Image (cartoon, rainbow, N blue to C red; front, side, top):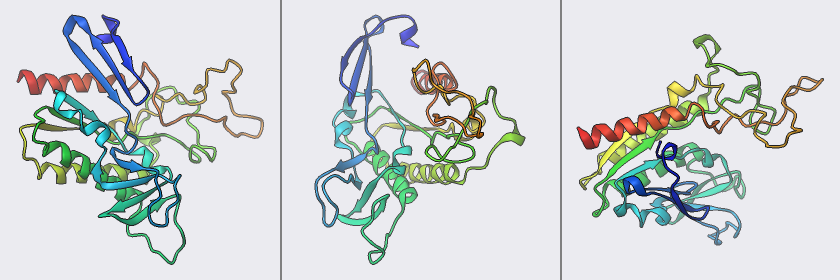
Length: 267
């Protein structure tokens, strides 16, 4: 919303971007943290160097060091748990996604359970940080809308031009369980709170299941010669049914964030 009335001063890089709005003395900081927990690519036990290792019981220090300076923190995560990584708890390998040595070493947790643990870890670290008294808003798991397959197996949202009706909704068990694990982690973290900060869950998951029309779809590429329609064989072109168009449905998220902030700070 600030961007509509003023061009900010921009500094930073891909990992951290800072936008300063002089007229309101407001700084918006965007920090990239793929899993929100500590990660390393160094060798660990039997896991080779280039496989990402996630320490699920330690928050990402890349943003934790900055939180005492923030009045409001907005967290979102989840989809990166579909990517290749190995999970570590108490300095022990307990699971992995798209990487595992062999069946002789059983997994203790899968990527869904790892996500739930990470949520409790990160939020727990924030609400027990002795020097943080701000407001933390946790945006719930963002639904995708691939039909007929996954992002890499022909899934499509081509032709979706308006919000879905109840009769058009496609059940997605993965979205449901990821949302459930996130809410459980959130609720467990609340019980650990020891500082004067505030914590709110901005639950957008169920509402935005209806917005299958809000993704770039086959228009994900700026290539003017891109294919946007199904071919003679009926197969859809490559597309993005995960990220959201701007402007689009996620503009509503900004409205929700503003309302939460106003209620917490203005009463």
